[in-house]
Amino acid sequence: MKKILINFAHPAKSHSNINKALRKVVEELDNVTVNDLYANYPDFMIDIKREQALCEAHDIIIFQHPLYWYSTPAIMKEWLDLVLEHGWAYGSEGKALQDKLFFQAISTGGDASTYQKDGYNEFTLAELTSPYQATAKLCNMTWLPPFVVSGVHSGLPKEKVQSHAEAFRRTIIALRDALFDIELAKQQEYLNSDVNRVIRSV
Ligand SMILES: Cc1cc2nc3c(=O)[nH]c(=O)nc-3n(C[C@H](O)[C@H](O)[C@H](O)COP(=O)(O)O)c2cc1C
Image 1 (tube, helix red, strand yellow):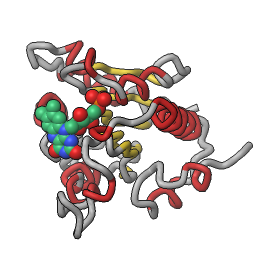
Image 2 (tube, helix red, strand yellow):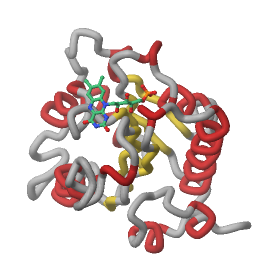
Image 3 (cartoon, protein in one colour):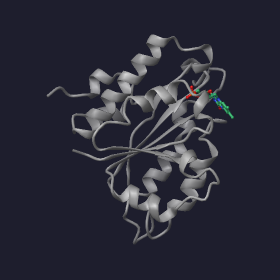
Image 4 (spheres, protein in one colour):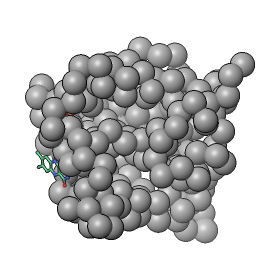
């Protein structure tokens, strides 16, 4: 079994609908650790050694967050700036993250159609998340496209929230149990574009 670390960042958790729902269905799973960054570091004083030890102890690292200003909530940037040290994460001696899987699980207020070249936001989520792809590459990690739940502003019906949560849970379990086709997933726009295609049955 692979070990999965979910770095969870939501500064207003009590108002969260979708991120709370996704988190709820995976946090009790074996070999899954949810690391709530705003709960652990309300003053942004990130414990670098603790975070590095958590990364070292897991095979798959996920950043779960709502899209804020086309990026992550602030604490995730602070986490990157502090935790990914030269000689640990990158550089000739920095091999701590090598070959670990990385992806983001993102919720967006805007509809999926707005994240297209000819859509309202003009940039795709692949373009907007490219700094994370570049970071993963620098750290010799295997990058996967983001798991995306979009259109949250238009009010997702309960059944849609449930089906996204179920797809997230299935994705996490398949990754953990090595039943996930990583090469196929890399070709999809989103990790959850077609979950049935990338999850192998036993
Ligand atoms: C400060 C802030 C910035 C936001 N920026 C964006 C954005 O750039 N693009 C977008 O689609 N939604 C944006 N949103 C909407 C959130 O992404 C949306 O409310 C969130 O994904 C809903 O998830 P939740 O139910 O877990 O809170 C923003 C919301 C806030 C509060």
